[in-house]
Image 1 (spheres, rainbow, N blue to C red):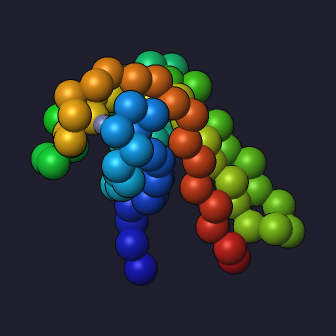
Image 2 (image 1 turned 120 degrees about the vertical axis):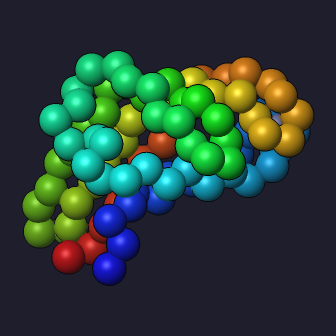
Length: 85
Ligand SMILES: [Zn+2]
């Protein structure tokens, strides 16, 4: 079992696929802004983390601001991950 939340997005500038792996403990109890330092992607600003769960599983979303590792374009995006129970 992974203790990470995997978020996936595309850079709006170059279109490359980016995976963000954030350990769950970094997201729990963090409803305000924080900076996650990813070993591959550098600093990622995280805000507006959101969680909901129900019979469908768990849904988590957050806003990120980061620099694309491929083209160095700075952008903001909302990312989400779904977990089935
Ligand atoms: Zn890019």
